[in-house]
Image (cartoon, rainbow, N blue to C red):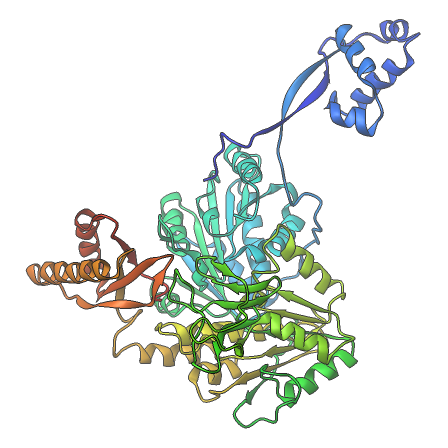
Length: 633
């Protein structure tokens, strides 16, 4: 929770005293004091009190008039708490009131959930899951209870807040890390006092002090960002399930691309609710896969993979005065800088990762520790002055598009352009108002956007995350493609999706082309049978790190030996993998090794309890226990 003892904001308020003069007394008193009479009557109109700052700056009452009322006992000055609501005054469109038959069936089932029971709302993109959330919350509020609505990242919060504020007005309090400490503290106090009954926010909002909780909504439940990677480590989805059981609330897990683990749970432990069609029976957009190995390419685009098919699609979209989204899940200008003579790649001195090339501002930057360097003039290994930028990022794509389509209005949405407060909202407002023709972005443009004039979605390179050394890489690629494809064709004009790849036969792309989430998950489940990975088995990752490479490796070996001995002693059905260096073997000057445990949840829980007591920090080397890890990098 935020620090509610700090950041409190107060202001001086002028209030009328309880003993009011009669009309005759007032007439006699103010006979020669017209300005005091105006102030007195203004306070009456304003409900008996008003901030002094407002009275002086907006209404023009001077200190002499204010002090005179106080001296005469007609008013008093006090300090009053000011509660900051950063979303006050933001657009709040009323939600649609007509439910589709599928939405009505889903809402009816949600209304019948037993206390602590959970439901998976599996709906295609554009099927109206948000309206089901709204109506579920409306029914909970009507019963005198509260609600928590969770979104996976800050970028989705303004849109969600707008929709819920349109339905529930000042019942909404917002909690996320993009707000100031004072704003979060004010929201926390409003919820704790019961002045607001609906908390909307990202990961940590699951702990919001909502009294008499009736429902928790976890939108886009599949998102990895729901896992808190720092101490305390928790998965928001799991915390929501526990809190719902403890407080007798219903739990709604919503997604167009549910995680494989959640889909398996839906077979036995969750209510499984479907929204199989888009609102208005609009079809899902056709997806065309472009094989970059053989597709004709446009000349003059440099290293940017730009096929003639995608180029002609952009030109036609702009000619019709429609909008396009272009996904490239790699920020920066180029992935790395390499010497053409000796092959040297500029690496971060603190992490085992190449430095990303940025152009605004120009320099090399590490996306893990924040280390920055100026762009070098020569290779540090051989002094060769010729160096090549490799791998295309969103900045380079933006520059190429500006050169190729000079009349198009282009915006970029990634971590670099959305680091300031309200930057998400400003960019999306420009798209909604039609001021932007082409929106480039990383994965943050793949979710939640609903703009009828977006008729083309282009995926510049679908392969960026396809072969990462993580068993979930295919699932995450499928989810990203399916989600971004759903941004097209939400209005009466329809839409299409163009996906560029060098691996068109990969099952993630095959199923994404068909908009078939269940087909993908069936095949992915089979692939995780041997070798076993979740949901076939459960995982615990013991991450060992330290500033000394050799010491970290030795400690990891000792941890693996300790686990093996414990498992053998109690004959637990657990497999020990490792120790092995992490794929990202060094981050922030700490060398990283991991020991992976596979087995049934109960057996792993037993090992975790022992490990929490025994595997303590030794010197500068520490062991982190990560149960059900979402990333093995």
